[in-house]
Image 1 (cartoon, rainbow, N blue to C red):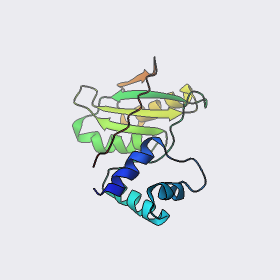
Image 2: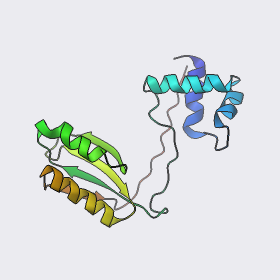
Image 3: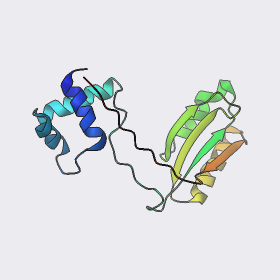
Amino acid sequence: MDKTSKDLLNLIQSNFPIESKPYLKIANELDITEKQVIDIIKDLKDKRYIKRIGGIFDLRKLGYYSTLCAIKVPIDRITEVAKLINCNNGVTHNYIRNHLYNMWFTVIAPSVEDIRAFLNEIKIKTGIKDIIELPVVKLFKINVVFNIKE
């Protein structure tokens, strides 16, 4: 990775500009063009150095509810069940674990009732009744910034 890409990654992790032309501001700070910033970010996304660029909001303050769920999925049905779960726009993560409850996912919705309705829909559509809901008891927010060195 070249120095400009590393500098860009270091900058956007903790100091992404909130303004109408954020890529232009980044370009000015790095002494490159706005198009170069956009091209570098696209390339870094394509290479999976960047997963997403976006805000993080306190869902509770916005009136939303989120929870971590775990479900026992037969190995031969992993893809089928994952597709069903992932079709809900409120699902933010879905991953496989080496555990009796082998599929874990997080879901966000406007209310607890909406979450329960979604989980009930999963039970009905898959026939899998064993889903654990693990709501947040105490929130820990860890801010991680990776210092990309030359």
